Image (cartoon, rainbow, N blue to C red; front, side):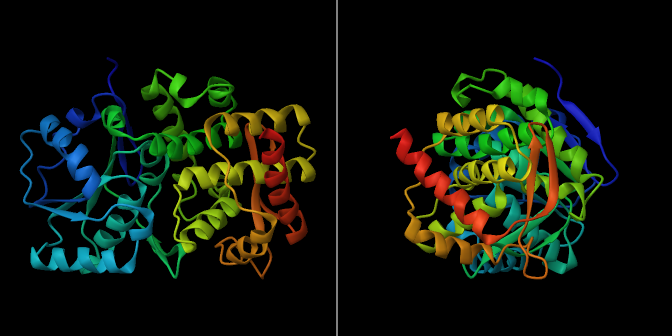
Length: 360
């Protein structure tokens, strides 16, 4: 087994790869008490692994919330604050966020706001968390059934990414993270795309090296653009339409995983890229096939498009009531702040629907 990769940036330490948990064993001595925030699924499947790999770590308390995007809410945030108050958690204590993207988002926000900030570490347990959500300092909750409406940028002191937790994942969560891995290949890492292209995620053997590569891609971007003023916006490829689709199903009472919605968004936004930048058909076709090989299509119809479009107007990338997108000029090269009119977005959703009909 190779040693995990250790990266020290200006504000965050990263330990990534097989053996990362054991490598982190000396990172807790400087703090008072250790409090774990996790969710009900992770508590059952991952917390025992965490404790087994770090047998000397003294855990003062565990706060468990309800899993699922539909529970990424102000109510659970208040619950965490109440528990931290009950435990009399102080600013010399340490909070460990153990879980997927929903957990690290809401628990990070709780830690950052409680007593004006308690230091925390992220231990992502899902593929999505390992390559995306736990990296970059974005925290927050959904509000009024819109994605990530309230939150803040705040970095953990350390992010420990160990693929050992992947063995606990269900198919839906593998898929969810895989969409983000594919995104990195499309926006900035042609070598990664070539490793993934034409493969089903279950055909990939060396996940540790894939995770290291994808995580480094995100780290390289966010360390130079913490507050998403420039190049970090490239990471939003697939997310403008994808978040609207995710919100659409959340509001309908049938929540879907983040990654499946982003996969749909990638198809739509790749199609828009082909119209704006003449992305060669030889590139658009493999992108669509790659997504279809790994993700099922959604069953929304043309009648649902106005609702999805309305949800898109809540997107944080709206400027002066103009929709801005991150698109790809070619595989491995993204650009951001491209103004897109509603007609082209509508046509991309129609492309998604009609292409589905052709595949069935």
